Length: 485
Image 1 (spheres, rainbow, N blue to C red):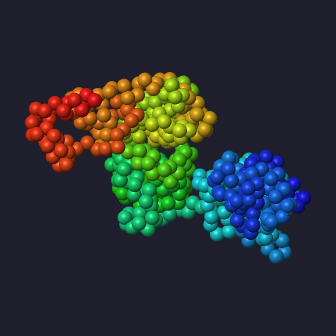
Image 2: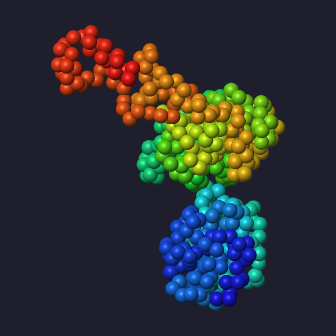
């Protein structure tokens, strides 16, 4: 189909193409089903078009991959006479970007450059996506052929209008919070309340900091936590915020502020700008570590005062990362890789995935910390610096610059031969002191047994007594000899 050539070059150049049978996407090269969010199951535009022309497929499609392209799907908005419903006309006119008919001819697909605060959302006749979804592509242009234009402001206006609903504050505040958690099925929400001490304090209105005193700062801090633990769901985060004990405790003046139609939306959007990950984006193991370490990191940042003591450049970012995470992440110069502490042993961070997540975590924690800065000029300037860490390139540079500050070598690992690392702690074979695991011991090996000083083996004791004829002195000597062996 020559009309595929109408598709803008901005899309053709991206290796995010699939073929489709009905609505099921397939990798045009391998012929196996494609998967949303997994780029190794997609191919080039040319591959998709060629596979379609070879037969066996109903069409081609474009996979969104969170790289600055937002797709808007307007379903069943084209009437029988070819005109558009009024709301569709408003959206198409406002975005003024590449628009094509869907395969049915009854819908429209619009592509713009911009961003939305969630992966995607669907409501009534409109859907918006930036990742983990694909659009069927026709090249059948609606109106004039246009480029994919920059429409960041317009796309957020549309998102806010259709997907962020004003919530009745007074009615929601009366809602039972336990039922809210159950009805919404927020497993991660419950994990956050249980394990994230800062979140719990903010939620209950108990968060105390001499540097975080204003209502607006606490509102932003709680909203940021809610967005993380509610998986970036803005509507749910706003609803949870309004139903929180913190909101219940507000006076009439501040409740009236919450009832303003724009306040909660603006607070959520501001918090969303600093959100680089959510609970459901991280594996369970990392979530538990993250939640456990949040309060400690905030205490560390309060002590370090990064907005004062670290320059806002690559060097400062690297030093800050090293100072915050040196107890759980060290660069091994012998292995030329990062090692991370998993709570018991230091292990190789294959592919640098853990330190990458730590870099994202630091960005989120810094944004939380920034609300405690008293000086408004310093606060604004530092928040601008923090937002730059949303760039992967900036985070990668930060991690690289952190490598030399607390680096180790293979010779530093397992250096103390008196320490025996066990499943439930570390035993000093010289003093027989048994204690909890410690990162500073730099142990990279662990025995697959737990220490139990009261453990006895009846069979072994019977054997030793029989061989040594019950001679306690010989038994102790044999034990010492075996120990030396």
